[in-house]
Length: 66
Image (cartoon, rainbow, N blue to C red):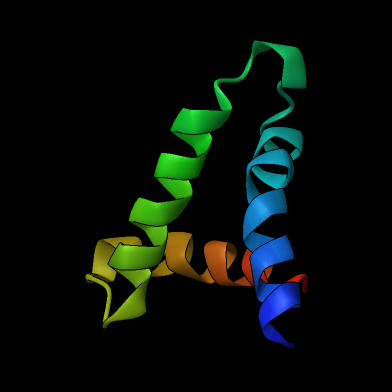
């Protein structure tokens, strides 16, 4: 995936998170969802703690479009 694809995946991640949570898009604070995505990226970029491994796997699938 090229740089543009990665940027698009990160841009769409809040939308994917909202749809998974079953939340209407109009009620979401996109800035906070982007913050959440950034924090998950930081947490999951190195070896995540045992408690976070499943969350990091879900995050990776969302980012990679799998």
